[in-house]
Length: 75
Image (tube, rainbow, N blue to C red):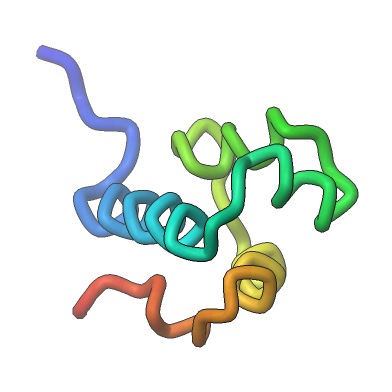
């Protein structure tokens, strides 16, 4: 039986991260350029292939104009 790589809460976080970018009207390429990263970095963060740390989350939140706690699932 296949196991989920990330918890349900982390999956919910990834959905919120992706939706926040789209609501800000930004493409992955736009975000990558603003953060001086390759587009693949943003893709890997949004897909869960790369875990997002708190410093990176702060950068995403600032770019998207969202408070950092808007990305956190209810505990």
